[in-house]
Image (tube, rainbow, N blue to C red; front, side):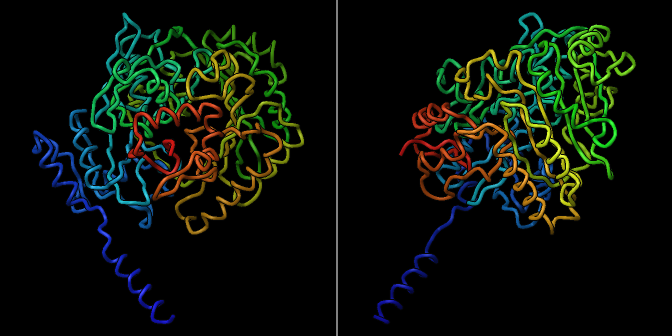
Length: 522
């Protein structure tokens, strides 16, 4: 019996030692043999031995929690400057046994666009950032590595009365944003970014370059809210531009909880905004400043100041908005304002990064019934706890155009009946990294407290505020439908089933995968 145990153990150790892990050498050799013009692609291939490797890897990491030495690093980074360079990367990654992570702007909140637990390469689309605007047709082709700020800037170069319903944050990469749904200050007027996508270019698991017609309507449906990383590599999006007035009006006012009824105004806001005119975007951010909790009300209104003041006095007189609180500006200037940036110069929209990088954990919910005032006061008090010193609550109003669209029109299902999206961002400084678990635990405790007061069956969540606490796929081996449903249903509700069917057809061997990618049926 003892001899058998020793023999079994010896065999186990020898088996482990004999495993041949995928290597970058195999991948690079394949690439040199597969590419017709290897000298061209070799200029955009970086391994850890390249002096630029670390700076390129770090350049698009937006959550400094993943800048640590212990964070898994890619064996190779490729920054293609043409879509034709991507098919060989896919084919060679498959042949070499490496996974692919695709990065547009680097805002994945769990770092899945540049982190994997198994050997992998990163395709960083930073060099594919061209935006071509057709004013006459009111469309634009947008390469997948562009940021939303670049999109806004290029549109405004061509027309002061065209816009696009993209992200509030101007450094967000368009590809992850659009493929996860994507909301912004025009969400109530025109819906999500994904609702206004009319074509796309995707490179599939076989290295074929496909547009909407050649990919088919099922795959085109899936990439507009279902997370494109599960299905291939998007290189460009064609979007329908929308009409905006020459003048929009904004305001941003603070009301503290202690002396200005900030909590009561938040409570009232819940019932006012979802029913408001579609021209009104009116979000709330709650945070702590020293000993006070501040409720910030920010609005972007598609019209003039006099009309906005009159309307606000009609629907929300308690807030006390007057003309001097409001500023008229162009639509493109409002994209800077709503991102808490100076509205000039407009060239700030071209910046891919912003200073002040921090570590954070995000949680998202959808509120379908107004939060009771005592609940609001409780989570306000939670902000006074030590771990919540830099935490913010974000509330994004729904209603309007977004709820007019069917839940099944795209994979993004959070539409009819949603009052607003509620998100918690728990931040901490790099100097506090040793205490990261205490901040993450606080975030989880907040999330647990909110359970009875938000959507249920499933408790809905926003894909672009990715949260691995919801559940994950197996790192190695297959993942069942049942296992993936644990996290998939909160993001997609019943649309998850159709996404699984599409995945089974277009990527049956599950090459494009991550901890929360759509699995094929087994």
